[in-house]
Length: 230
Image 1 (cartoon, rainbow, N blue to C red):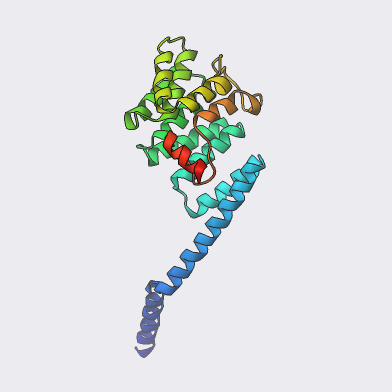
Image 2 (tube, rainbow, N blue to C red; image 1 turned 180 degrees about the horizontal axis):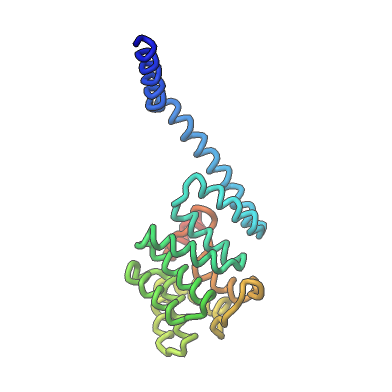
């Protein structure tokens, strides 16, 4: 009888040990370690993107997502890197996940539109994603200029009106887009092996304004001037 009592007592003690919550000090230490690791990985990511080493950048993105698997900005940057790396199927799956997690993110609909244009060449469907983004943020420059570009591909003369709307938000950026990044011909069905990184995809990437890790911000002309002055 005593043996059974001792056994139960020992088992109870083991359960109590397993259920004992972490001390505040232990939790704080783990949080600091995690923050330090994320900072180091973010710095690595920036350096790889600066060097156009997108495979290494993707590896670093995966490491970041192991720590913060649902981080909005990291997932969006992952889609961009997958596009540049010509991994269109993976880009499409990832942006669908972003939309599932963050259905109110207008940039996510913009990215979905560009992925759709490249992956399926269905420009009408791509425009429908642009429209869903505009329902969330009507004055997003990137969405407006992207809609103008895609309507032009569809032969819809109303594209000029959308250029006008984008110009009223930021005339300098609109002019730059028209001079440097306007694409005359719509994307044709491409394979992941044949698509050229230096061509159409880089022009479309301008639309979604690739930023460093932690970016993804809309800048008004005043914001841009302030950042340049700083």
